[in-house]
Image (cartoon, rainbow, N blue to C red; front, side, top):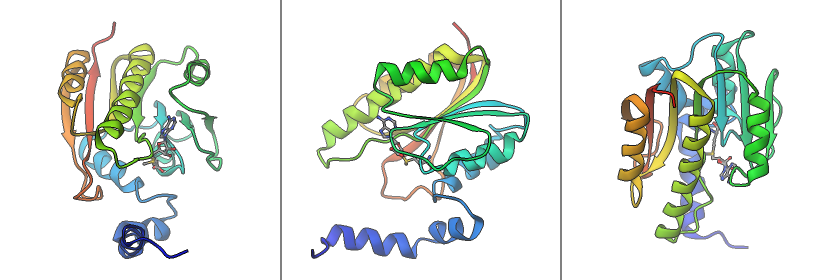
Length: 207
Ligand SMILES: C[S@@+](CC[C@H](N)C(=O)[O-])C[C@H]1O[C@@H](n2cnc3c(N)ncnc32)[C@H](O)[C@@H]1O
């Protein structure tokens, strides 16, 4: 089957992309690793021994970065709707995060561990219908914030991928109410034309 112009452009960009080449060289499963590494370089959100929840983790780039920093004494619980090849000492839950039983399985895996950091790089498959895509993306963000409110310890941090558009301002306000400090991050490795940004909430105020 002939490839569309869009998929040809995507393939060309993908193979020319320096971050794709770096990921292959450095043994990371995705170019997304460099987004977390850049945020880590600036904000030092990961530290040895932490308990971290990684949402939308597949294929595992962020989980690789996280498990390397938190080390043997850390705990990482990762989840995605897709399969993910295992990473030593990472608990992985496969399922749709919008389903109650998957949300409950993640809570179960966390148990009574006070969580230091929740990271979410979740993004729905884009249909191209902007309003519908934005609504689905915002719903995932809402659920990730809900999980964070339940599991983060006071003082804990939250990092989430978010798209500018309908619902962004209200969400930003909600995060500002829950965290002492809120910042936006657009790593260099995030493609310029992508509307994605990362919202970083630091210092969870607790319930
Ligand atoms: C940009 S990728 C994440 C890349 C990952 N952070 C890494 O470093 O390899 C976004 C992920 O969100 C996941 N996702 C989208 N909708 C989801 C849902 N409803 N439940 C769970 N995961 C979902 C996708 O399957 C996809 O793996």
